Amino acid sequence: MSGFVDFAADGVWAAPGRVNVIGEHTDYNNGFVLPIAIPQSARASVGRRTDGRLRLASSHPGSESVDVAVADLAPGALTGWTAYPAGVLWALRAAGHRVGGADIRIDSDVPVGAGLSSSAALSCAVALAVDELYELGLDRVSLARIAQRVETDFVGVPVGLLDQMASLGCVEGHAYFLDCRDLTGSQVPFDCAGAGLSLLVIDTRAQHELVDGGYAERRASCEEAARLLGVPSLREVADPDAALAALPDGPLRRRARHVFTENARVLRVVEALRAGDVRAIGPELTASHASMRDDYTISCPELDTAVDTALGEGALGARLVGGGFGGSAIALVDAGRSGAVAAAVEMAFAARGFAAPRFFEAVPAAGARRVG
Ligand code: ADP
Ligand code: MG
Image 1 (cartoon, helix red, strand yellow):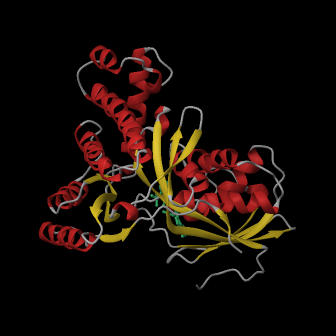
Image 2 (image 1 turned 45 degrees about the horizontal axis):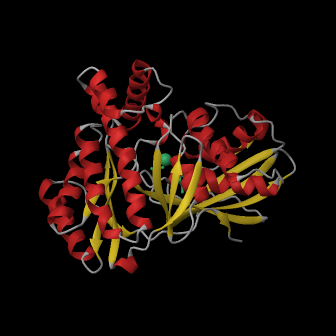
């Protein structure tokens, strides 16, 4: 905890990481997503300051502390982790809100860079805190958009709204079915334990270089496909089969096919969960992975190994989650089998010379809230 600023916090706010059950790379295509919040969260202890200074510290190993004037914040002014909390104050001020200085101390147990959205957990916790301390009265969708601007405009990664909406909007025991076209959502009961199942998260610890560039390239391909089809986004396509036939054979068609089929899978999963049939979602998860591996081409050997090994050990379904090219996979397994599945994945990784993976069970947890 060295390097921590010493201050009296006015309160503590927590925002969780997330696992997206299904609906990958659909958010920026105005499509459907279905995340759950995970129990791991970023906690922001925040105190208001009257001198316009922003002081930041994080307990995450190797995190430098900073002390800057809020008025000096601008995209590019800060790099590294401090860009996330500082970006929240910048984005709020850029949107015209009266926000001054703050002391912010971050303590997060969301695995960093594992595709579980440690970044949005961080920015959403800070956004909620600053909203309350500066009495801005913003609703959660507005706060999610602020946190998204932190990543798109301040950090410089063109992310969709999934992570922020999940962190701010999820409810314990439920998956959050969100339509990214108009940001309307509903809570869908998701009771794995009640169905005798566990949702095992496999953090592959892999991080391939393509992460940022690959993400931007996929996003650009979808925009190009929509342009060729004469629609504002791939969501506005009424007849996916006709649209696919109209697109040139090649990557563009395959990217669009992933988006169309993934949206349809989300709807089927929501239907199954509403009917109380958790087991039925397994094949949809596996089909989602195949689509991302073959059509969207965002998998990697570690993710494929995790998914194939879990399925070989009897998982009902498995898929990569998050942006791809590394990070985590999920596997839906019979309760009591997760240890055996984890052991098999561990062995498969060791046999291929991959770094040792990490495991935990995801239970649908609460969204962002004040905790102290
Ligand atoms: P993900 O959101 O999937 O974990 P990202 O690359 O989007 O991966 O965000 C990871 C970045 O978020 C880290 O490199 C770091 O800058 C920042 N971050 C997340 N959690 C913390 C933390 N507890 N302390 C400091 N920085 C953090
Ligand atoms: Mg992130």
